Length: 111
Image (cartoon, rainbow, N blue to C red):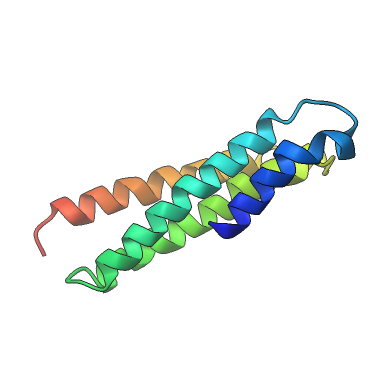
């Protein structure tokens, strides 16, 4: 979450100068998703310390992969990365959605 704050601050105060334009909405989306899912991973870590230990392992994997793919590809695309990164963003979104669905399923299902 700390890196999300740093990237958000840089996006708000230095990215426009670096890019030469003010189109930073993709960057902001990446930061938002990174921060929100950082909080979700914190929740998963707390739940793993309780009765749900191994059951939530794949939730952590999916959410982490989702943030890396989704936010990471948005950051790189905003900075002028190659166009082939475009299809990576939805794959990250699928990982994030899958992680949330799996978490709900595992928490609702009786151990």
